[in-house]
Length: 266
Length: 179
Image (cartoon, rainbow over all chains, first blue to last red; front, side, top):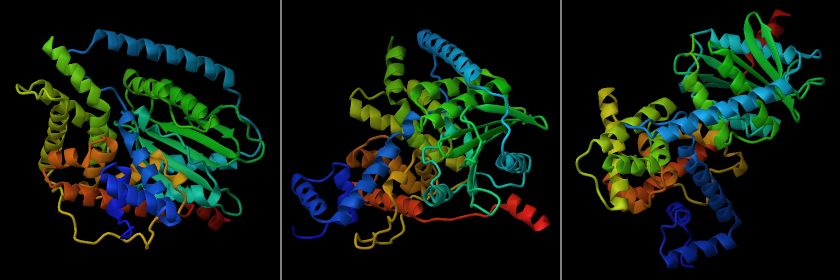
């Protein structure tokens, strides 16, 4: 070992770009230095997450002269998934629960304030650090479903620390291409909140709430077709229950729904 | 028949093209449109490389040029010149938290905060899986430049992820003030 590996060496190492000699030199440094090993692990994890970006196309790219087979397969898959989701929704929907729903009213108020107030910040204000801070300090779920698969764009992200009367919460705001707004709210679950997906309508604003583990979730939409919102709610609910992101099947269904239902009215 | 063959070739690269496009635009809809336009240009091209690596580089170059056209049309300048700052040494860690917190969502958000040159090189190497040499051909820069940009870009992403920020809870604060 003649010299300590540089940042470029470590990056080239995880990219497989080093000569056999340099590769062995970096591997030895990793084995001997926990700090370098941690750095390489972080770089590798980052590379791995970036490599998956291409798998999240929000809607199919249509080339000229499309294969009819693929189109019909897509429609069939979408219909099948819609039926499945419908069955799931029928089995898991419950009447709106009683218990402490102050957090839900707060979430509803924040959604309305964001969705109906054109002065609220857009994409430029979105900050990943807020998400990380919420995860680190209050143990909120890392695997919050990402609704960009549903043809929505993350345009708002806000973290609310706990106060004497309210628990910590995370507000993810998504905007559709024609302006519809969707809020996914996550925070510490209050006592009495059920695990079933519960629907409510307050002042003509439809919403859902449920609990997964120690986390309470709420979902609201403004200007979105009810059928599409129902599908999204079902998918988000399932994803949070299993503590995972959306799988490919779900992404296909969400993409299809974004193109097969009436556009946003917002 | 040739059209179907060309379509199949392009379809194989759609996810990687999309990933690269997203890394350039930072917007899912713009990325989709960019891939769509790239595919149409490729299908209408009279000269298509036979060799697969050359075809792949050609396809991504079309996408890159299409994006540069979009940027020019929007009268924005793509800053491809790196600043001259040195790399941070390994002895000065900028990566301070558990790497399990690097979720897909946070990575996407941080990507949009990088400079265009950094987004682009990560889009080619990490998202699209190009080697440094292939990325250098597409970007028309020396391999050494790609090597340094990759290191800087990842360093910048990890720095974004490592910093923190907390906001207030305005609705709750207003309620408390009203009491």
